[in-house]
Length: 216
Length: 221
Image (cartoon, rainbow over all chains, first blue to last red; front, side, top):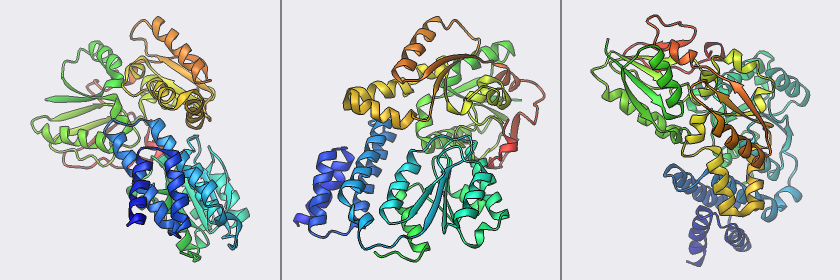
C-alpha cells in the first residue's frame, strides 16, 4: 500500500513540478527495487498531466521546460548506474535536428535517455543537412538514426533527409525514427520512417527492442 | 460566390489593411493566437468552423500552414484556399524568398506587433517564468528555449506606427539576451488572397469534399 501511495505521489509531484519531492520519491522507489521503467511510466503520466494543464491554459511553456529539467535530473542523479555498471555499449545512435531548424530541446532530452541506456550517441546537433546525415551514417554505421524537427518546413526536410539516407543504402543497416513538433503518424507513413513518437520513453523502448538488447 | 474568411488574430491588423486595399467585405471568423501552442485544439477549432460553414462556396484561410495544423483538414462543402506559407513570418515578409534572404534568418526570433499582443507571446512567457521560478532558474529556462537564437526581429508590416512597439521590443530583446533588429514586411501576400484569380504557386486550392495533404518543401512558398 505504501508503495502504491509513493507511486501516486510521484505522479502528483511531477504534475506539480515539485522537483525536490520527485527526486525524493524516485530515490525511495529505487531503494525498494521499483522497476525503472515503471518509474519512467509514472513520470510520463505526471508529464502528460503537465501537458493537459498547458492545454487548459494553466501552465506555460516554462512549465514544460521545468518538467524536462526534472526528468533530466532523475536520469543524471538517480539512475547513474545505468551508465556506469554492467552494460555493454549498445552501439552508435546518430541523431540531429534537420536543416534550418535549431530547436533541440526534445533532442537533448532523448539524448540523455539514450546515453543512460548505454547507447553511444553521435549528436550532429542542429541545422543538419541531409548530406551531413548521410556522411555521418556512412562513417558510423549506426543501428538507429533519430531525426527531429519543429518548424513547418522541417517536415519537408525530414522527407528529404530520409530519401537521401535511403538512396545511400542506409536502410539496410539502420532504422530511422522521427520525432518533434512537426512530426506525426502521417509524416511517418509518408516518409516510411520506421518509428514515430513524441514520447521519449516510447522511442527509447522501440530502439532498445530494435537493437535486441532490451534487458527489461 | 459566398466567401468566409478564417483568420488568425496574430495577423488581425495586416488582414484588415489587406481587405481594405482589396475592397473585401466578406465575413471573418477569428482564431486566438494562443491556439498556436495547442495544434490539436487549433485543428479541431478550424475543422469545426469549416464543418459549420455549409452554406459557403469558398473559405479563405488568412493564415499559414502553421506547424502543419491545416494538414488533414477536410474541406466540406466549400473550396478551401490556403496560402502556401510555412508560417506567418513568410506571410508578413511577403515570401519565403524574402525570408531566406535575411542574414541569419534561422537564428532569428521574428515578431510583429500582432504577436506582441498575443496572450501567450514570448514576453508573457518570460515574465511568467521569472515570476514563478525566480530570476536564475527563469533565465536558465529561457537559455534552454532560446539558446540557439541570436536576434529578435520586429517585422514592420507597414500597417501603422510602431514607435512604442519598437521601444518595447528593444527592452524584450535586452532581457532575452538577443540582438534587436527591425525588418520591413508587407501585406502583399495577404492582399493576393483576395485577387479574383489566385496564383497557384502562392495558394493551395482544395476542392470541396477533399483533404488538405501534407505539403513538400517545393510546394511551400
